[in-house]
Image 1 (cartoon, rainbow, N blue to C red):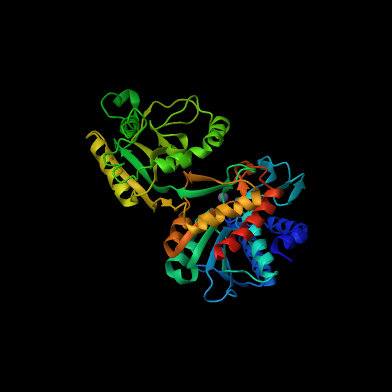
Image 2 (cartoon, rainbow, N blue to C red):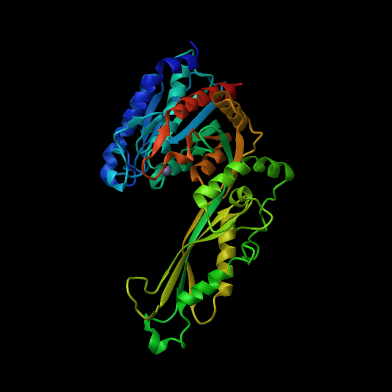
Length: 455
Ligand SMILES: [Zn+2]
């Protein structure tokens, strides 16, 4: 029997297993569910043992939600080792949020399975686990396997960072696969080969020692809320580019071939921009497409502003303090420390003598990640998607940041991101669901990938 015949014969049972996993509320963000996270971890470990992997639960430090690691080295010391990362924890959910069905009672309607975690990210856990099962049950797997299922992706990821940091040899592999996220559309496979880096900070503006009566002192004191607005208004140029001196110094330029490749998803993006974003009019750095602006160019965003009185009614106050949260998305070859230095230096320069500015809560985040589209992992992934979906993939540079991808890329020789879900699946939202055909195609993609990467 081929592994794919095996999946055809066993798909109904795999679907039931998937529902069993979905029924466990492995909510990592709420301590009240800690024993359910552990229950999911034990469920996965039992499944791994059943299909022939050696499972282990690892929590670092003790007490965190465990990483479930399953290893198989039956392909021998000369074969490649592939590490596959997924996460089995989920966001909170309750029917009162507006769900049509109980979020932890998996409900199949047509070709959809509704449940919290269906799309983010238990479809990936199940697809990769089933692919390994099908290979091991039918003549063995052509590569050695390390399945790494994280239990706190939605809540900080301490254990996985500690593992990479303190035991890199355990996480080392020839090929690393991050299996999470979404493809462009249910019928259109895509591969993300770039992720932006991120740094975040808070900007505080302090003025008078306490909030003042705006009638008594207004006109004689520089209002910190106004000073904050004046400063952050100068962080961008009129054309939308970032005005921080030196901000673009290290940005790697796009060459013609990449710009050409990035145009392949223009229609998909235009549709999403129209339906999901729908601003009064388009905005952004001139000379760049939406895909380039969101995937290949760095940004500086004001994520929130506070200061003064914003409650009901009116309070004629002159606030003593105002604050803005600022984040920058980074691209190759920007260095997070250098960017923080430049942004905070420029803010210091813009701060008038009438107020004081402080930068706090600095988070150096991660630099950007850009994988070579010609790399063997991405090429094997592209071939695998084409086999499963019957359509060539579109390559994407995503605007978001996946810290673990950056960390694992440092210790493996080659990497690919494999997604089997779609953006309409309601991740972090109500009525989250997966499409059953995508679970099936995901398993076929994962099997074909592992076969292709062995060659
Ligand atoms: Zn998530």
